[in-house]
Amino acid sequence: MAGVLVVSGLVVVPGVVVVPGVRGVPGMRRVAQVGGRSVAVHDGIIPRRRGLTGGVAVLPLRTARLVLRLMHPGDAPAFAGYRNDPDVARHQDWTLPFTTGDAERLLAGQAYLDDLDPEGWTQVAVEHEGQVVGDVAVHLETSAQRAALGYTLAPRAQHRGFAVEAVGAMVDALFERTATHRIVATLDEANLASMRVVETVGFRFEGIARQAARVRGQWADDARFALLQDDRAAWLSRSRAAPEQIDLVELVYENVGPYERLATHRYQEQFVAPMATSFVDALLPEVVNGERVTPWFRGVTADGVPVGFVMLALASPAHPDPFLWRLLIDRWHQRRGIGGRVLGMLSGQLRAEGHRRLVTSWAEGLGGPAPFYGRLGFEPTGNLIDDEIEAALEL
Image (cartoon, rainbow, N blue to C red; front, side):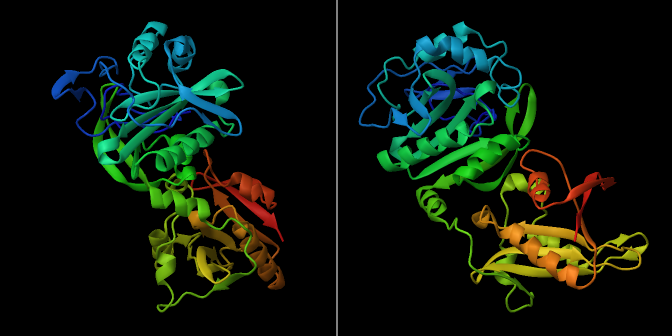
């Protein structure tokens, strides 16, 4: 797995971090400024400035399971081992093969440091039970109060929550122990695993820079994410408790505004259409089986706060079962049990109306809704709807 890198310094230009992958700042992938002059980047390695760390006191960091410390040349075999894995390198732009010699040369460039470089890149080892299982790359611009970071995990360390744990710890340390105001992350829009990591930490999607990155000879778009210190504080303090009251609210002109602004995480948009699309679908419903579907939709409030949106296609002679067309819970209110309670309310309502089952469909993929619906009792029917898996809940 990997994360996000922005290139503007003196150590590496690793390109795309994947879970594994991050990208660079426009115009700074192959040339860097060192001591006021342009220096060519060769295989992602830039000659390091010599100097002292100078006032930055961040490392080491310890979390519940991990230790984050400066990487040193002795880590080169482990570093090269996972960097040379084609799956790890898929969204990266370093040259393959990436050898132990390449790793030694890169790490030798930071051997003089005793903490993060205040004006450049630093490669930080991620240890689990005394073994290097990945790294976090940090680029500080202390003078500008900015930072960027990226990460890569060895395959054996993936899917265990290590990336979120390491990135979250580094983000908090940068905000608490340095003057950093803003942390930037850019990645391949296809790198949904990395996108999921940064959004779980609280990064916000800011847009797509078209054909902004040259990756293995091809131009690629950059997905831009950023996190402000205030964003992180708000994210950590958001409500995570189950709400006392859930209500389904009829939407009218006077109350629709907050619902227009509801949004999932960016990586979830492949599974749940944004609110603008939902309103268009409700206003201009499609024709299915020769009959235009009839939408029924409501806003969702939790203790009076707008948090979601749900829409059904009502049953009709051409559509004998009601269809769950849309269920969106805002990213700030996910994992509070709201979606399951909304479906419980709908199931009770439909059962009272005499319906025997509720049908829906979903796309498969990392972070998709299949586990959520499975826990609620939906079972695949074996049919596909527009290449999505159809499933039904017996009422």
